[in-house]
Length: 87
Image 1 (cartoon, rainbow, N blue to C red):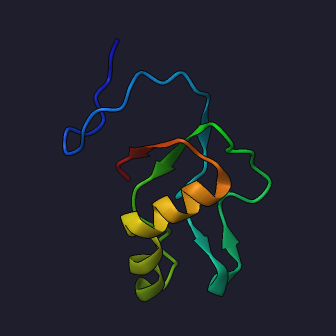
Image 2: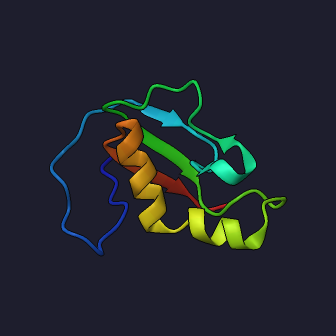
């Protein structure tokens, strides 16, 4: 019943938090694209598809789906974690 999502970092303590599906979990101002619009992520774990929508221009997708940008956005919306689903 336990699930280890990544062994590349030190494991976090046990967390009991709601999961919220947020599509690709991207916020791309240049396209007025915001997967977090209208969602409350404060204290929750974001469930995201890896990658980006096929129609998104490659340069924007490469930038906004980077781990640094994803975590910056997740912190801004108050999420405490991420569960990524291969797409």
